[in-house]
Length: 208
Image (tube, rainbow, N blue to C red):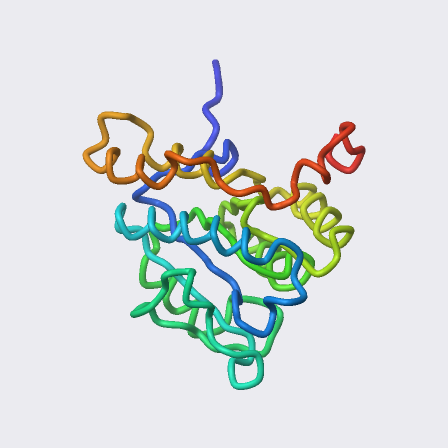
């Protein structure tokens, strides 16, 4: 008898079971995070898609009084921002938001920094039984070594690494989707290079 695997173990994304997390893309980080502008641009594609597909969105800001607001080019005006000081998006308020949508068991995660809030959030979500999808071209750090090792660390723990276009097409599933043409406009042009090719070149042993 062939055993079927759960969506979580396979890492499948579905529009009806997903939620988008956008972490700490704020003004004060702009000069220091590698490929910051590109990361925000890719995350904005994910946010536009979430809006069209009516996927819930959680946005956090790390100590906004000192580190400034979410950057305007993300396109998040009108969306609630959850303020925090911890290096983890799962504040009590965010956890309550997740509990209000129990059918949403797949978290798509974008933002900064990969080795800090992205990794801590991922590990906590995995520990709580969520299926976590890291949009690798929408996550970065000050140090590319930290970024690379954090991506590997999360993969070791059971998170799925994907790209923005890969995630978006999984969410759509079919070109017959009623919102396909709207979303197609978002991915018509390739996502900007956020430095991943240099990290993955020569079959980096961290990812084998």
